[in-house]
Image 1 (tube, rainbow, N blue to C red):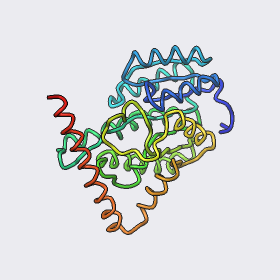
Image 2 (image 1 turned 30 degrees about the vertical axis):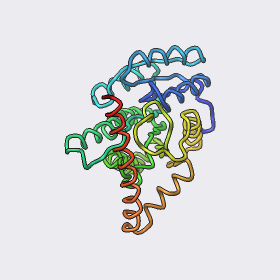
Image 3 (image 1 turned 180 degrees about the vertical axis):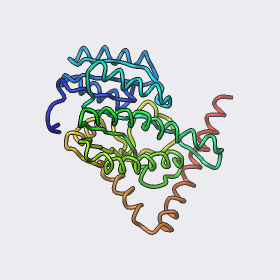
Image 4 (image 1 turned 135 degrees about the vertical axis):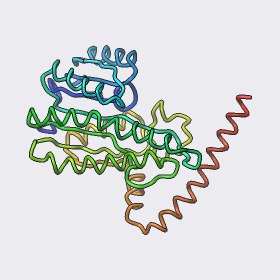
Length: 275
């Protein structure tokens, strides 16, 4: 597939499409005449999206499914192939987390974020890989995070899940190189979505969903293996991977104490308001 070409009459699966970046990408691809399979948990939002996709010129199959359910994810992929015959592009845009203070968490709560940010992608990734091996090619793009490059304060479990996913996809590039499958790893910084409003996390250099979706589509078309943005937060995250660890821990530790204090203040204010 030539990356610069339109997705007209190409089949695109978007997991995590009911809102945010996934929804915006679906609408942009609909305008190119793509055949879309959109999936997420919220059926009503998916059906509304499917109607909008078809108004913009695309065909759309909306399938509600829980990405944490391995069988449900496999069934979505099977239905996509049954309906359109193949999958040219899969965009795995699932996961997320609010501010997470590990000082207040137990093991069960930590591993829950591994399921919601690692398992959810894997459950779609391997059925899609199986299909693309059979059809001898395709592109798989997944939304990772700059938090997957180093341990970010108040995002520890989320960072761990994204870091594991980064390593898994890097290994897939090696093991499936002869099958014509291309992998695009996207590492965004802070994106303004409904899910992030009031989540207690600072969001420097935050971008809109529209801008993020446009950048991601450009990276996919260009065949970028790894694409991180925006530059300021991307540069700082990458710098944190090469500086001496003691220095990084000292810097992040200061930030953690400041942000934890703000988070506690927000919670106390919310409790007082509730009373």
